[in-house]
Image (cartoon, rainbow, N blue to C red; front, top):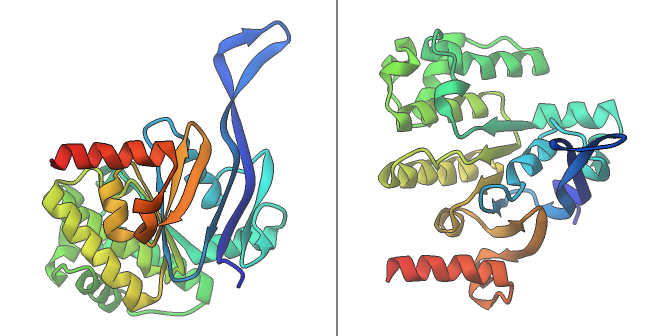
Length: 263
């Protein structure tokens, strides 16, 4: 069975401005031969501490950063080696970011924030939608009343605004959504509410998720599989239900830190 998304031996490095060499700037490698597999309908947690390279991996995954080596495949088609592959990924993927305050234009009404996703779908499918009805439907889908359409982002709580960003992400009818630390700025109670919403939408809309986070507890709550990323290298990819069987030192360290904290 061909995975929806597959990454094969991805390598990425950036120019280092701190270390100058005689013949030019050196480069710092951020990802080392990273491979992963994401089957349709599943949720993969990409877990690592700050500086592990997970956000860089997310940029490669969503088509924003071409790797120096390796390839990204969407249903077996290369994303970075053809315009057709890049376009296919753009049409099928949405992203929800950590900082909902900057990802929603503060001058837009909520109907206009969600409207960005609606317009993207209309351009792609060449269809006309009843704008107000679609905004109301999407607000209801994420658990918000229709009256929120006429508010500005600063008039919403963090959890409410992240629900709006999720509504915008699903407005264009994606098959895959990448969440880049999408719940880390929320309080614990709101995190659980948002994760419950995401699980419901995943089943209801037949979505596939890539869930980037530094929180192992969130991974165990949300994900089917988890990929551990440490200093740009994959240390293990394992089913969440088999986490207790892991022999990976990095995974064990994170597991023990949670156990010690909860104890």
